[in-house]
Image 1 (cartoon, helix red, strand yellow):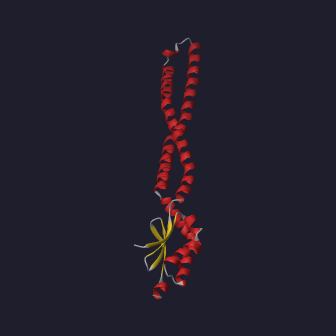
Image 2: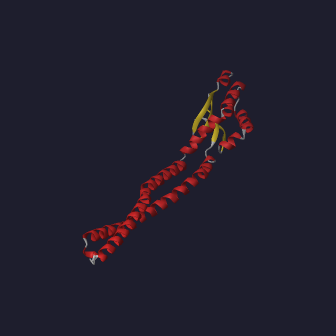
Image 3: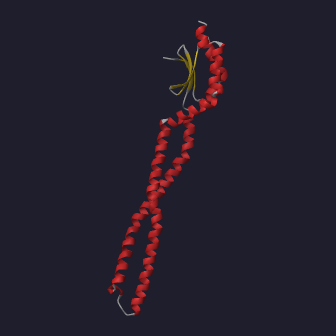
Length: 203
């Protein structure tokens, strides 16, 4: 098992403690200057690459995976119900058109002194209108589902970055050694290492 030389709460805390990191390393082990230079170059000059690796750990955190899964589910629900938003306008246009058609037919039939209820065309149009009106509540219910999904999605997206900032503070970084290698751990994984060639050679 590697021995922990120094450990910090997160990326920011690790990188603001360069001096204390080296003080702790030198206090706990006799490291050769050449290996010191190699490890320093790896973790400090290679800081940008370490940041990318750290960000991957953040994205892989259970809280972040859960948040992304929730956003994906809400996007799916929003897409599923969006067609009803488009459909309502079409339905309302059809209802309006049927109402107008009935008024025109009624006027024409009254001029001919014919009871509209006895006219097949009038009856069929009235029946179609009734079906359309009957469909309205179900469509409006789906639109409520869409509005609910949209609101929840907007909230979930707004919460994502603040959650990420919180998670970023919780992934520790540490310097560890197994006696042959100096390793940089992010979370529970060794993500970078330097072979202690000069240190081992001087023993």
